[in-house]
Amino acid sequence: MKEHALIKNISRYITLTEEEVLIFENFWSEKTLEKGEYLLRNGDVCRYDNYVVSGVLKAFYINSENGNEEILYCSIDDWWATDIDSFSKQRASIYNIQALEKTTVLQISYHSFQQLLSKIPKLERYFRLILEGYLVTMQKRIIYNNIYDAEHRYFDFLETYPNIASKVPQYLIASYLGVSAEFISRLRKKNKSS
Image (tube, rainbow, N blue to C red; front, side):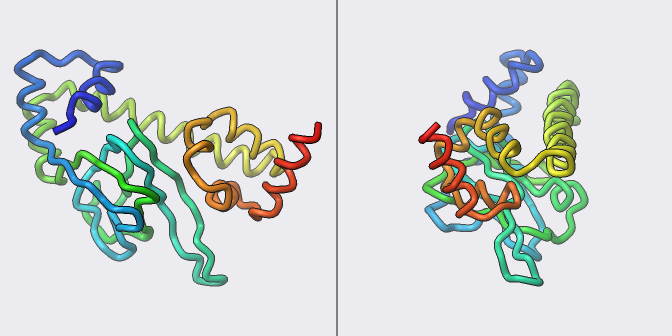
């Protein structure tokens, strides 16, 4: 098991006792996905909350009008990859989560998650802070999409998420930003020649 990465992540926000760490570790299981394997499919219920130990996942839906894959987010090491709505309400997901490379995640089921929070109540604070961070990211994305041009959004993405930009193909970043892969290629060429 590779809980130490998750415990380290948690320790940035709250402190767990040794006893709490032992309790915590009993609730998680490790899963490895091969490249191309799905963690979640559109229409399925998200049964697990997933912490990425290593690898890369993309969350996406298929645009019913044009058939294009629309990227919602990419998750790398030390990130989360879950359909929060599907997981928290235990209803069908509207999107997919798929491995871009061999990926290892730690998982906790919905019912185990509820038990864990009752056994270690201070974890509520940790997960609230994680969700607040996610909400801030989503708000920023909406604002940037409404007020900034595509070039500004691209360079902000590179600055904000350098680790994702180095691990994820450009066409997925383009989809995330709502631009064409050709547009990003032109920006990169223009930037190299400057």
